[in-house]
Image (cartoon, rainbow, N blue to C red; front, top):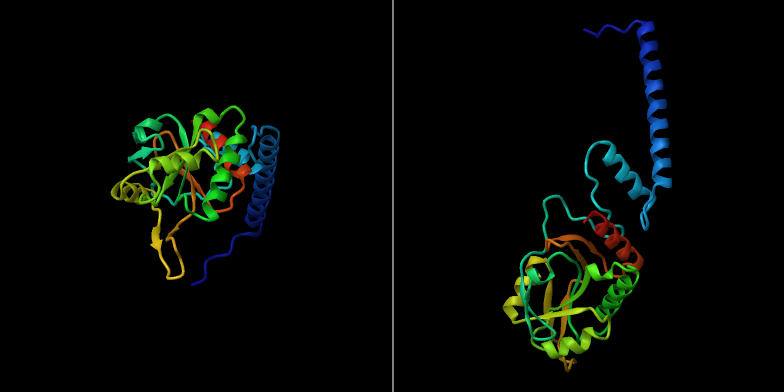
Length: 237
């Protein structure tokens, strides 16, 4: 049996109400976009400003933006406790970085191209923080502890940034830290090679003061995008 049709006057009332609602929503969105445009914070994009204002109006806390970064899937957690050795030979743990953000990259000093490029990107991003760089520590973690001793790391990280920390350790310590960050690495040897290389994933990790990864950046991300993400996290800290 067919459902009874609505009387014409009810259909007209419903259509009129829908039109009015659409106009109201459009006006509200226009006002919010305008407020987002004029109320942008330093280094904040229009979309980020809009999201911040929208969540504030809904009574929620806006997450700090991570422009240029890859958002982690819901429920996924990277980072956590570690025990390594810095370039001065001191034993360090995550507690030594408590209260500060970190920009972390895993690689090796014999890396011919990718690692120097990404570490240079981190150094450039640090220089763009303009007075906030003291709250951030650039960290280079080796996946080749067999060759990357503390002395080798000290010479290497000094070439990129004066505040960069180099972390090494024994094979078990490096493996445990890489596993916490879900870093892939493997030794590569070929008959024509005099030295082995390390195949490894190549993300830059933005780590919060709690030791957990807030965002990660794909290879060849722009220093400006990384600096913007860091500034956003610093505002929300």
